[in-house]
Length: 150
Image 1 (tube, rainbow, N blue to C red):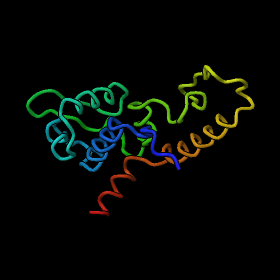
Image 2: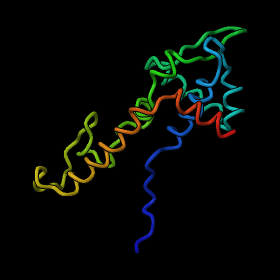
Image 3: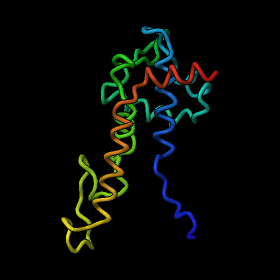
Image 4: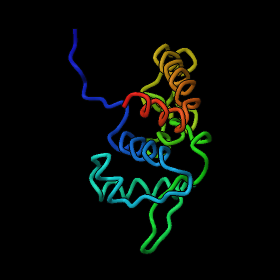
C-alpha cells in the first residue's frame, strides 16, 4: 500500500473558519464577539483569524461593528449558513480535482478525453456526495451538535 501523499482535503483555513463560525452561531443573536476572544476560545492565531473573518464578512456571512463595544456576529441566521458555503469561501472548490468542480471548473492539461475519463467521473461523484452533505449541514445544526457533546 502507498503512503499518504500529503494532500489536504480541508485546509486549516477552513477548519478555523468553521470553528469561529460555530462559536458565533452558539452566541445570542445580537451578541458581538471580539476577534481576540474568538481566537482565544477556539485556539486560532489572531492575525490569521482576522483575515478569515474579513473574508467571511466580505461575503455577507458576518457583520462587524467598530468601537469600544464592537466585534463580530453572524450576518444572517445560523440556520441559513451552510458548511459548504463557508468552505467554498475559504478553500474554493469542494471537488478533489479541478475538472470535477462545478464552480471552479478547469480542464486538466493532460486529459485525452474528458467525457470518457473515469477519474473525472469518479471525482465528480465524490464532489457531489460531499456537496450533498456540506450544503445541508447548517451552522445552527453544528452548534447544537457541539453543545450536546459538551
